[in-house]
Length: 104
Figure 1 (cartoon, rainbow, N blue to C red):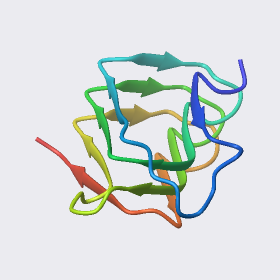
Figure 2: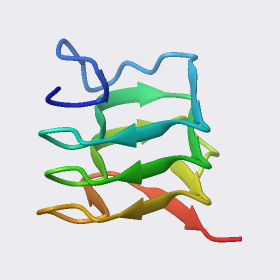
Figure 3: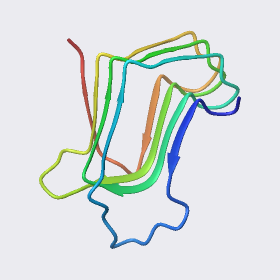
Figure 4: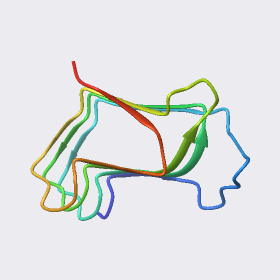
C-alpha cells in the first residue's frame, strides 16, 4: 500500500474554504511503502490528528503540505501520536502549512 491514509483535493482553488472538520483518531498504521498519513492541498475548518500509532513505514510518518485551516484556527492540531521505526523520511514533515504539535 503506497499511503495508508491520503486526504487530498487535487482541484483546490486558492480562495476556497470548505466548512469541513477532519478528525483522524486512534488509527494503527503499519508497513506502508510511501508516507503513512498524507494531508495535502486542503482548505478546511479544522484537522485533528490524535492518538495514532504509526510504525515501520518506508517514508514520512505524517506528511502535511499546502493545508490551511479557517480563520481563527491554529492549523493542523496533532497530539499524542506515536511515530517510530520509519525507514526513510521524517516522523512529521510539514511544508507550506501551519500546525500545532502537542505531547501529553
